Length: 373
Image (cartoon, rainbow, N blue to C red; front, top):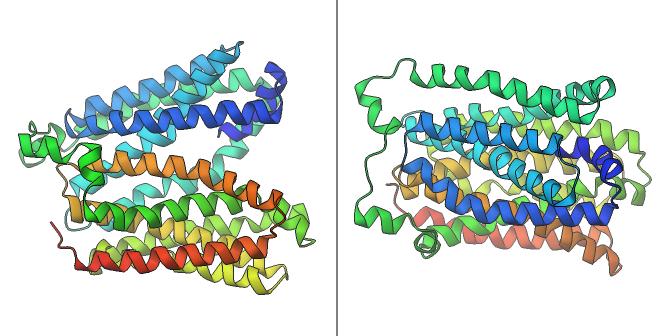
């Protein structure tokens, strides 16, 4: 969503690409640090209250961005959008699905995850159309008004059909001393499960983001037209959505733990194609493979986290992995930029990515030794 506003923001603030990238990158890293702390509160306060706070936070920072005329306010606004939007709003949805559903956890997470590809499909068209008529600042005001309308709807849906057996999940019991210790980021990082799951998560987020961010440059290097690159990106969205749903059914049948080691493999097929061929179908195979990996992994990884760490501290655990993901999306493009500047081409980067994914997959096989909580 933020990318749609970038040209207008740069024009309004009279800033260059590099300066905006620095502001965006700094705000993203700051939000990543905050998520590790703020995301843990979903384990400690009632779900309705946490949800309202997150939605109000998103409304506030969208409003702040619409009224920003100075660079410090721009930085703070983007920080808040990254924190309360993709960060905590997604964290709230997926953590709640993992906690509330035991028998069909995979399906519930996969359905909640569909919000991302659905939003990616319809929101750009809506927002660009609104900006053409209202300008970017009033488009933000319109968007935050929609979120305000959604707040009472969210409260109604959260309180509907609540019974006493679910009450403990809406109002978490206080942590014991042992649970409080286990939920701390440093303690989570000391567990073997973290070091099995984290490398694959980092690889998928960093390298996938790198290829998607440089897709136009990849097209130029292979004489693929920008129109083809834009149209072909549909393969990413389709692969992401379908694999997400499929992963939910498989995770309920076989467990997230057993499926986790294979989730990087679809992207590996795309890297192999890019290493040896330059035909247009290679681009489709690449973005579809990345989409399948991202969609499959977003469900399987979260199911595996609930299975290995338990639902009591799942919010604290997910907040740490969200931080890893956010950092990864900053590291990937940086690494790609350095490699391209030093003369490596995309087939070389595909080879490096394949080696990295292969090492992470071998490491992920260790997850099969762990017991499900």
